[in-house]
Length: 578
Image (cartoon, rainbow, N blue to C red; front, side, top):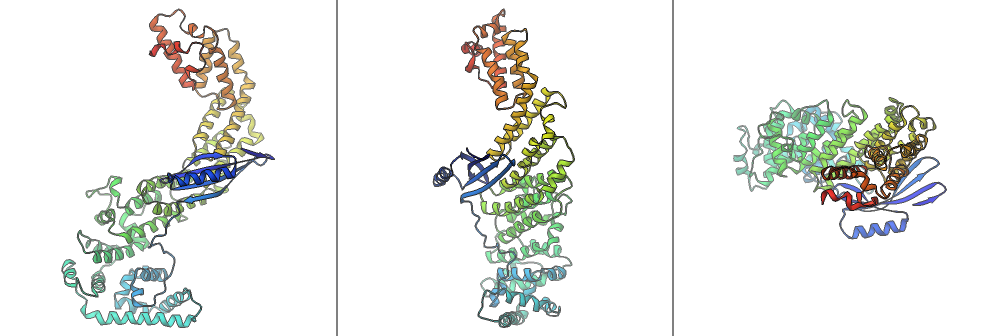
């Protein structure tokens, strides 16, 4: 590790397999780290490789991380991933395209929600168009916004607006000219219409118009959606499935429709997990089947087609909806900071299971999960959580609870940055060295904290620095209590002295580092003494001797010491199992 003026620096090489990043190597030299990272990347064993420079300022107890190298794991943009953008439509075909309908939604979704219609309904019904035309300046404002979005400096906004109006007029002419030839769906049977229209140049337009007209009597958006979902059956022609997919996806864009379908829950974390399964068509993984009372027939029917990847636009809309649910500023549940982060953590686990082969979608949603967690983890929320209990041992345990459910490496670092300052506060030192209670009991608390820190998903530097500080406190207790010296001075055999120290090691009274090293050293000194193994079994019959050796070897294992390392006759310790 590089050390200069109280500043520690090292470089962590992280590799990605599946959706997880893990530390592969740690180097002190920047050039060596980047060269090794490049060699890892060339092996193609990882889908991503990163090098992160980790810095610790001892004087300030401050950690910082900077990414200096990255390869792979860049999310490719979906062909449907255009939310929030407006595509200028220069022909009627542009207007009726998926991008055109998406732009209409972006421009007028508030009015469409109020009228309980979709862009497709607007584009395939003269009545809906006339309603828009008579709605004050709504159409004019939409045209103007679209004209402004043109990426050109060669035409004025007025000229661009004129072009767009010409496209709208041409679309109106199309609706007028085909009005009398739109077939009726009054009986609700789609197959005869498909047979009649199949092969016609304008079959898509006519069938869509027929479906839009069929939806008009429905009173609510969910009623309309139900009327379309019933048309989903196996072996529909591809062009028909594309129409149904587009129309269902547009209804799912309306915020309330999904709540009406699946039920709006007070626990939004549970709703997001259901939505994640639904988006993949995997509600069956939640124990749902065609006989489940939990979801409606419409939901289960959609779930079946989503599972077969025959509704790609619906799947995309549900991904975007999941992102919006994650990003909403409303609380996820009523279980406080840790409870809400746990909901995001559980969602992360579900997403990794569902999208383990689709890293693009996984990364797309995980960006929102990590960002939401980052907004929740801040100085105010953490300080408020810690203020509820001024006991530093409890505070660090709370931070470890928080870290365990925190999503995102940067967010975990934010949590970890609060630990060392607590350990370094002078007013807390007496508590950490056990002057407020039984010092030996405090050693056990320190071991528990150290184990939690070492098993946490923190940077190597965070783990080491925090673990070292905890070990320092344990060493102070060891020096103050003289427990090892007192055991040594007891008027008992070396074997009994060894057992006492090993029992303390096994029960977790010595932190890893100098404290544990001192205890292990004293045990090893005893075990190297001539006659140590004979003393364990002195006066015992064969069966008793074998059991005693077994018990001692088990105690060594629990204490984390190999029976082969230090005994003056290690073969004797293994005799019971020979």
